[in-house]
Amino acid sequence: MNKHSPKPEPAAPAVHTAGKPKLRVLGTAISLLEELRVKAEADLGIEVSFDNNDFIVTQHKAAQEPDSYDIYDQCFHNLDIVWYWRAIQPIEIARIALWDEINDLTKTGQIGPGARLGQGDVPARKLYVQPSLALGDTPTGRISMLPTTHNFDSFAYRSDAVDPLQPMNSWAALLDERWSGRAALVDEPAIGIFDAALAAQAAGLMSFGNIGNMTVAEIDELMDILEARRKAGFFRGFWRTAEEAAGLMVAGETDIQSMWSTGIGILNGRGFPVEQAAPAEGYRAWHGGLCLSRRLSGRMLDVAYDYLNWWISGWPGAVVARQGYYISTPERSRRYMSAAEWDYWYEGLAAREDLPGPDGTVRVKRGSVRSGGSYWQRANGIAVWNTTMDEHNYLVRRWMQLVGRAEKDI
Image 1 (tube, helix red, strand yellow):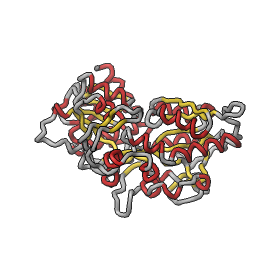
Image 2: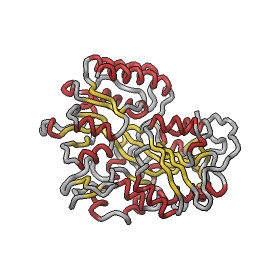
Image 3: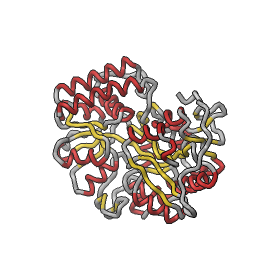
Image 4: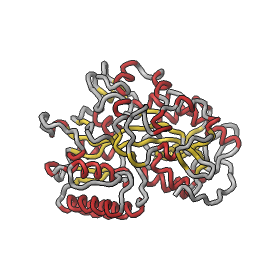
């Protein structure tokens, strides 16, 4: 997809006021936090507005309304369509002051030599802008997206609903019949499909030639499995935001489901008995970043680069760590975290004190231990990356049919 290059339109000035530029950021709740917006305004001397939507709406706006934003804050697996339509422009590495400090997970796909390389849309394969304007992993002087937040997701379960003698350490649990009527998946095809695929494969229900790029036949087989579960009343719901995910558990509707770190944080903050699994098969990983709108030029382009550099300078990474996400320049962020925070979020050690979330309220209780170990252990256990597969359009049609029917059932 990204090898096709429609002729880009001439750049036009972004929105700005006399004297104080206004930077418009399009993205999701992953990183469009009010604490970050306020701090960016103070540090950079600009106005910042956030357009916060779910993944699907955000991607659609990014591709179809490039005049409506200056910065696209999204994930690498959502990059193909906006690059194809030239809604964004290349980022000059020479203008990224801390480029050399960005870790290897994004640049090579591995946290270190010999680390496990997950299947699917490994960010490194879409990072560099090639002379042909295709995206690839051969280093050049330009990149498609500045790597920022990332994480390694799995599923969560109510710890008070599980026999402590039966470890929940396999994706197979997500499709286990004992959770019929008490399970939920995330409603985003490029994400939820992999939770389901990892579960089906772990349970021995099917196998894949390449789980990161399924064939039509494999998609059909997997969707048929999910349809059979739906007809049997297995799924309680499909969710799009962390708040919705947490709400399902708080309302007593689910015992097991897809879950993001933000959802875990919400539940932990309420003292809810929830655990995130550390599957033996590996995590479903994702990597977010920042893109420049094709419309940026002149002063506003300079402002946008300031924002990109600010994002990896340390303070923002400390904020997102408090909701369970990692940053591409962790040592910079370490300076803005307490020793207890660093030990818990990055080293995988027990919290030596109550720890705050981004808003300052307690999110982690003293003595808690993050599942999966340290950042480096988790990063070495990637099964697959969130991916927009070759057969994505077909997958979306099948997925929408499943979710639409499930919503009528509920």
